[in-house]
Image 1 (cartoon, rainbow, N blue to C red):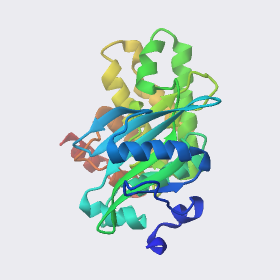
Image 2 (image 1 turned 135 degrees about the vertical axis):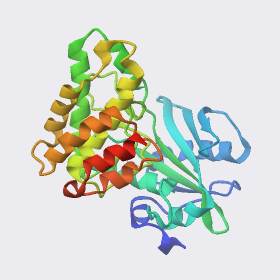
Image 3 (image 1 turned 135 degrees about the horizontal axis):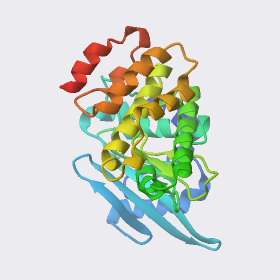
Image 4 (image 1 turned 120 degrees about the horizontal axis):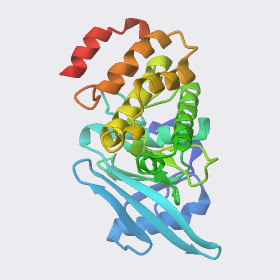
Amino acid sequence: MHWLRPRFLTRQFHRPVMLSGSGWRWWLMDESARQAVRTLDRYLWNKDAEGVTLLTEKAAKLRSTYRLALSEPSGTSLYFAKQVAQVPRKRLGGLVGSDNVLLGFNHGTAELAYNLALDERTTHGVKTFAFGEYFQYGLPARQVLLQEYLTEWQSFDVVWPRVNYDAKLRQALLWKLTDMLVAFRDAGIHHLDLHPGNVMVSPDPEAPLRAIDCGKMSTQADPALSAALHLGVFLHELNNKYAAVSPQLEVDQQCAQNLLRHVVGSETGFSTAEQLLPLLLRYSTKRPFSRRRLVQRRHHTLDLQALEKNLQN
């Protein structure tokens, strides 16, 4: 079965090991995380909660997140873990590492691949230490990512209202956002769920932003459309949450266009992206609208009038 696994997994991680009778198999990238993996393995086996804190649990999406705190001679080490249960139709995709319509999107193997790519190609990713899998009938039914814990970092939507009366700090945050989008453009990566809750801000003002929750991504995006969608989705959700609270927290269309120009002003599809952005600022792009289909179009094939009718429905 090892030969069926994706190449990035077999090349970058040690061969999987079982640390107990839990049934979980663990791929370790960093041997220093073995104690954290043992702690998580015990928790998943018999709910031994020592050192493990449940952060979120979404039964409808079959996802849970945890914080691990390990006491070590040098102090307490913190880790972040995310568990994803796979519906049956996505399990073959999780085994072979394929992320497509036939085998399913958003399984744990795809999220691992995108996390690694983001961390390797940019400064805006999160380090991964290990990857765990629980098999049923020869296919991964549950998967876990073990990553670094962003201590004292906060999401963009938590930080944004705190700079309500400081125009310079607001501008600094927006320029950090564009720096991240430029890095995504150069790396050929599109984050399909880049909203203010999935972008983390460091207490260090010099540190770059980090993107999390990378299960929904694409590496086949038109650069100009990708930038417009990134900005449109992000600013639409930011404005919907805070514009009514304070007009100063609203990012207007002119500002958004300036940010877009900074990211893809030299791209051949910029003119189309510039016309697309106001639509994305105005309308929600949540389901049933498909962001993936939009971003994988070529800019010269995009019918903006048809798109607006679709967004209005």
